[in-house]
Amino acid sequence: MSVSGGRVVVVGASLAGVRVVKALRRRGFDGELVLVGEEGELPYDRPPLSKGFLSSQGPVAVRQLEPESFYEGVEVRLGARASGLSLRERSVLLADGSRVRADHVVVTTGARARSLPGFADGDRVARLRTADDARRIRSALTEARHVLVLGAGFIGCEVAAAARRRGVDVTVVEPAPTPVQRGVGALVGGTIAALHRDRGVDLRLGVSVECGQEHSGGVIVSLTDGTLIETDFVVLGVGAAPNTEWLKESGLDVSNGLLCDDRCRAVGGGGHVWAAGDVAAWPSGRTGERVRIEHWTNAVEQAGVLAVNLLDDGTEVTHDPVPYVWSDQYEHKIQILGRVSGDDDTTLLRGSLDERQFSLAYSRHGRIRGLVAFDLPREIAARRPLVAAGAPLAGVLDGRHG
Ligand SMILES: Cc1cc2nc3c(=O)[nH]c(=O)nc-3n(C[C@H](O)[C@H](O)[C@H](O)COP(=O)(O)OP(=O)(O)OC[C@H]3O[C@@H](n4cnc5c(N)ncnc54)[C@H](O)[C@@H]3O)c2cc1C
Figure 1 (tube, rainbow, N blue to C red):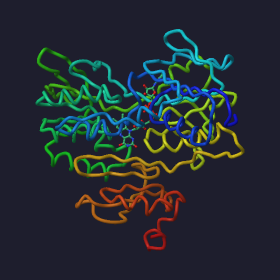
Figure 2 (tube, rainbow, N blue to C red):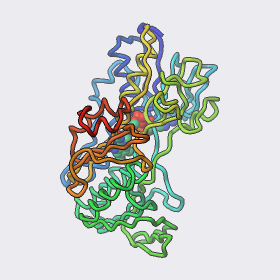
Figure 3 (cartoon, rainbow, N blue to C red):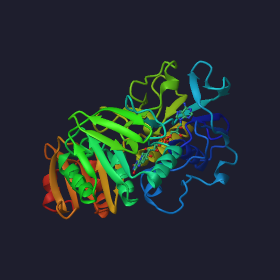
Figure 4 (cartoon, rainbow, N blue to C red):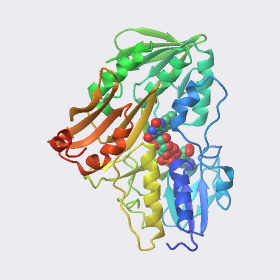
């Protein structure tokens, strides 16, 4: 499609969707732009929801991604859920029965927080994905004496840290032997565990939840080791799932996210369907495996790539990112660059784990795959080229690569 004319319908009004709109405009697109979003408020930033938004004592507001003026000239349809996509008619079906015609459909419907059987959202149970979820948890933290967090991934750990900062007693239950084990492995996971225990979090590792029973005064949760935990409020931090149900009948591959090529074009979408952000899956140019990345930076970068390719002005770019994600817990910043796993070899590059200020290289077969920086933010920028290139670890260690 050229920069002149045409109608682009972006489904999912959050980070990736807004960045697609922004990038299309910046590249001179002057056709029609429609932004369809299920939530009832203007797009906002999610990372602060598990951090400053929960931990601060005073009044806080959700941080909007763009000011209201940004949406001038865009047909914004909030509170509108897409329920289907017709490739033949090139239209998006909305839950109210109306259809939105499109020359191109951009899928940016992201992901939602997973639930656990027996823990339906309610007065005493919440997941954390939306601003409304965060408002509910924030208000629970002002009244609760004790909060139980199920899952010690990044979001669970951030909620635990925020709750402790608000003076609330916290228990965290995690089936793995350390927090964020799948993300960073046992070594850094152990550092994160110590961080939380030092702040008074009752961290129960290697144990799962059996069931929960709500009663008038709170919730009683039983664990697989036979323990019972009585709490005022339960927060689930058990991962996310891509929002693709609305595409189920479209004929597109939505087995884990919407499958695209590395140009952000949905496979089987006839060049008219695109995806970016948490919902998009594609074959990684680095590893060949199908990847789907639930990180802020990926959504931004992929949206930019999508816009370039959609406009088809002779420039084609591929999306082959070096994944990057951060987490803020108490006063600490944990950053992960590249792909790291508990199965990788780990090598300390700088600092010390005991002092909780370090960078750690993750490698396989002598080549660096990723890096964790714990309160050493400069390490990320400095080592990025090495991680991107999969540089030999030996070279990194003897100083040849900084
Ligand atoms: C609490 C929290 C903290 C986070 N912290 C970090 C962090 O520290 N660092 C980091 O890198 N990443 C973090 N993330 C992840 C980051 O926020 C996401 O990667 C990013 O929001 C992805 O943007 P997206 O636009 O792809 O999807 P989303 O932000 O999930 O947006 C998708 C939008 O589509 C809408 N939608 C879904 N289905 C439909 C439908 N059928 N019709 C219409 N609209 C629909 C949804 O309502 C939503 O508004 C955090 C996420 C959360 C929830």
